[in-house]
Image 1: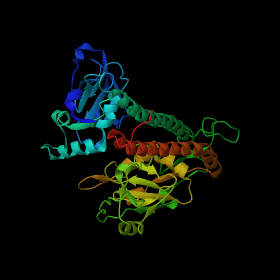
Image 2: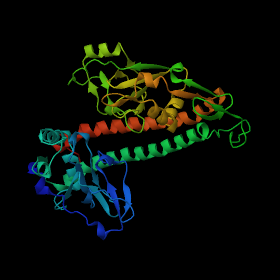
Image 3: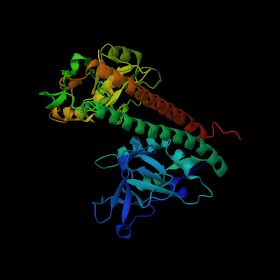
Image 4: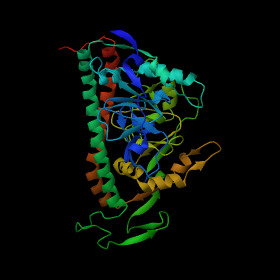
Length: 421
């Protein structure tokens, strides 16, 4: 093992593109990648579409991209199989291995993205004089990291983490397909109203009776109702007192935070905000959230939500609202909360305060919930619940694998643990 500066291993920001040389580009923005998980790549045709001015950094095989803004958000990754004409934003610092016979790109990626180096770079970013925390290329180039000098050992270490990440990515892909199928089913039944009628024909398309609803401003099937969500759920706001200090001794007592809610509608508790037993007792006297509760953000990423999975029990952090189903299926609610109907209601019920827009308890209680006939709802739950349960099981596995990876990473990188032959 030896310490070495990043600039001795990598070329940084090695090559920028000339748009005139391309018919199209595949563009990666800084917000589209987090811990090597890519949400979106934009294919843009040169001369036909507006090309972002920051679309300049050429990506090659095994290029590491590292966002220069707020390193703690972990917008970084290694592009193992780049698309044709793949380009990254200049908001990234790109790193390419100088000599692949001496250093393995995957090993260097996992080494560089250890929390201790992320925290170091974030401290530099916060101390830089700019409108937001950011680092310069020289900050990462001059950083020292401790590396294994034997490339065969590097590859063995890297393979473990590559395999873990492949399983995580596979679960993400499965979940995306399951989510798309679940959404299609929900839309077919509760937006188009073509659920199977008593003759197994699509209800509305086959002439099923409809009636105009004044609240939703559209037709719904005869016999269905529209009610305020508070009739079917308990709704509880968080405490508005000062957030308890972080407790450095890891335990099962923690607050759920805004960052624990993903855009995909589930809870990510890979990173927990631990608090003391006294603080936890104080906060749980107000609300202790549990399995099948829903949590909404009422500020920041307004309207983001997550369903609490099996085995999770914690206190409700600030700027969150909890919804507990009482006499309605949580599986139906989960699909409703992710629907366009819900999105429109959030937009129409936003409270535009002096500093930011919020979606508070008052607004949530105004949500109009479509209530199908009981037999229709029960049939839908039979179909949708196995899908949601599988998504939640995959998410739990993703989080477990992430925790294992983060636990093993520093120990393998500093030689505390070795991989046997």
